[in-house]
Amino acid sequence: MASIQDIQQDIIDEFDMFEEWMGKYEHIIDLGKSLPLIEEQFKTEDNLIKGCQSRVWLHAQHKDGKVIYTADSDAIMTKGIIALLVRAFSEQKAQDIVEADTHFINQIGLKEQLSPTRANGLVSMVKQMKLYALAFQSQN
Amino acid sequence: MIEVNDIRHQFPTLHQKVNGYPLVYLDNGATTHKPQVVIDAISHYYEKLNSNIHRGVHFLSQQATDAYEASRETIRQHFNAQHLHEIIFTKGNTEAINLVANGFRQILQEGDEVLVSAMEHHSNIVPWQMACESSSAALKVIPMDERGVLDIDSYKNLLSDKTKVVAVNHISNALGTINPVKQMIQWAHEVGAAVLIDGAQAGPHCSIDVQDLDADFYCISGHKVYGPTGIGALYGKEEWLKKLPPYQGGGEMIATVSFDKTTYADLPHKFEAGTPNIAGGIALKTAIDWINHIGLDNIVSYEKELVDYATKELSKIEDIRFIGQAQEKAGVISFLVGDIHPYDMGMILDKLGVAVRTGHHCAQPVMDQFCIPGTIRASFAVYNTKEDVNRLVEGVKKAQIMLS
View 1 (cartoon, helix red, strand yellow):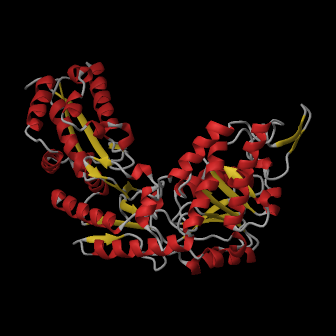
View 2 (cartoon, rainbow over the protein chains, first blue to last red; view 1 turned 45 degrees about the horizontal axis):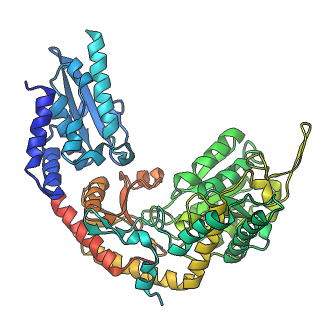
View 3 (cartoon, rainbow over the protein chains, first blue to last red; view 1 turned 180 degrees about the vertical axis):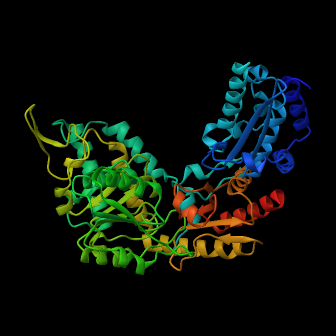
């Protein structure tokens, strides 16, 4: 498994192919469509991160020393960015997730998506991903 | 007649590019832009008048006080209130409702009822919930139908001698529905209830005569009527304003203060504790004068033409559905396209330089009734054009292609 750092770089390279915002957005929409859905049993109120604009469900489990995230959103753009975050953080060691940053979101020109004022649930989602990792880390 | 190009020319913020496109601003329900005269009025206060009001004997203080009080008189005339002291400056619509609802905490008793409508935004729900909680009164909701029209028969049935307050909006921010407030007030008065009309959306879109409506309270926000943020006005009938306790304590609202007892100032100062937003108050007059110079009737008919045109053009989009289809509507078109999430649509429209509001518009119960997460809302002002509408329609079509 590639490191979080490497995956983030891959994503940056992948988005470099698009010169215009429209290409980037279309790519995110495609990613949103391809994100494996969270299992219905995990789409609970407990796993819901409330944003004013769109809602995000996040589930995490610890398996063989790695954290596995599944997630969903009712908005496709949000879901596309979730797909990127899941790609970067899922199946990584808890400690690596705790220590990681999310610079790639800035670098692919989607900084505004991770702004608290967007109220799309993504800022809280990143925080929640890290909290899960921290909890799993302290279990060990 | 509206010369829209002349009007647009007066709004500096409209003349900019957003994401490479000339800005199309259709989020006027949230706040309107300000004409240069309003911006100048704010600067003028800080450049020439800056002084505290109602207390200084010196020249500047007197000038500032005169300008501030002249604004109160303009507001009185604009809403046709009987007395000048029935106009209270607030920091906006939300504060006005809180001021009134807070006062009713002491008047409401267990068993009393407060009626709000199903199409209120949070500012006209939560203050009443808080008042009901602390007084053990009950909050009741006037239902609306699937068109977004209040169920008037249910309203009449809900009214009883238990009803102490009715709080409804004049025009719904989420749906654009114009409510029949004059009739609603009359029926409420027959059971002895006081009525607060939330005029946040009505302020820029219709002429308001508080005496003709016979409203007990009517409030507006300055920033939605081309004025500054942080200033608004509450009209209250003298008898009610005398009955309500002060909202906040401090300077300005007192007659005499000692550690044994403080006596409160007369109206309107009883409700205006502390140094107010003086620049905002003065510039609110400029905004209202500006509206009256153009003429509210002209604004209303021009906006109606725009909304009708937008509705007609948007209707051509496949799978569009309008949320809020009342006969009587103003200023707002709320819609959804297929199963596209409003947030996704808003993101793409933003990239195309078109500013709309997406989400629940601070009216979650409205969205719950329609079982939707939110809507895309285009809301209009007198400076919008048919070209703005065309850009919106093109943007929606483009987003539809990208998202499906």
